[in-house]
Image (cartoon, rainbow, N blue to C red; front, side, top):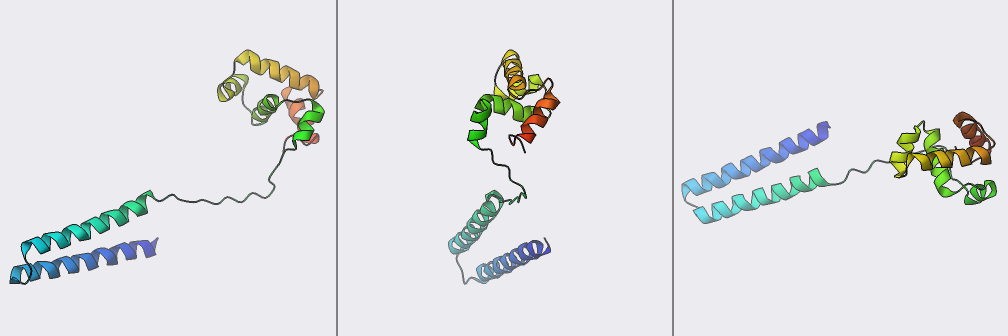
Length: 142
């Protein structure tokens, strides 16, 4: 952070020195007004492009995960769980309500209840917590 502040401060100081030197040259008559205006326009154009690129450049954030969970599609098939049912199961595991699941997946509340009921029978569970526990034991959830 301090490096950035010092870098910007030094850059601005150098630009001011250059501008004052050009201003002095204009005052003494060594440089015409057109050249002076062109130099200033060029300096501010370059400065504007540089600042614009610095402000709009994408910030890359790297996140390392220790235990990345990968689901095997064969496990879903072996238990007879569809992809949509698996989506519902994943949102259940996150603690979402039926209405929140419906909103997230753009399906009706009755469809969520149907998927949940189907999951309960396929996972041999009576409640959400049992279904999530069974899914974790069978390797369907991390």
